[in-house]
Amino acid sequence: MASEPFVGLLVFVAAREVERRVVAAMRRAGVDDITLAQARVAARIGPHGTRLTDLAEQAQVTKQTATALVDRLEIAGYVERVPDPTDGRARLVRLTDKAASLLPVARAEEARIEREWEAHLGPRRMRALRESLTLLREITDPYRDDA
Image (cartoon, rainbow, N blue to C red):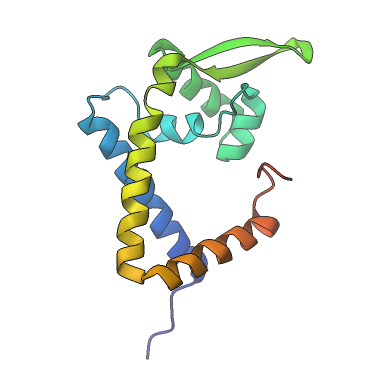
């Protein structure tokens, strides 16, 4: 009898499918100038901006890779670099209005996914999944809002 897959792999597969579907929804909405790698970096930009080094760390890519991805996002008009108000030498990467206009598309697809998952799992299991993953953030997500 085959052993059960590692739970980390199961979470990864589900997360990868969410990313694929959100990017596909953006494509259907006419957005064809942002890649999955760029979307992963952009998704980590905070509401007031994020330093490039922090984006690289959170996305688990080199600073050079993050720079290249942000450069392409900037050329496409999705991000801008602005002075960091807490450190005059530093710059923040901030989403533009063009990027913000994509959020409703992404959020709508995320809501669709959650409805599908709940229909498949049932309300009790979906609630348990959310509660379990929320608890796991306490030990797995150094970037969570309350860290």
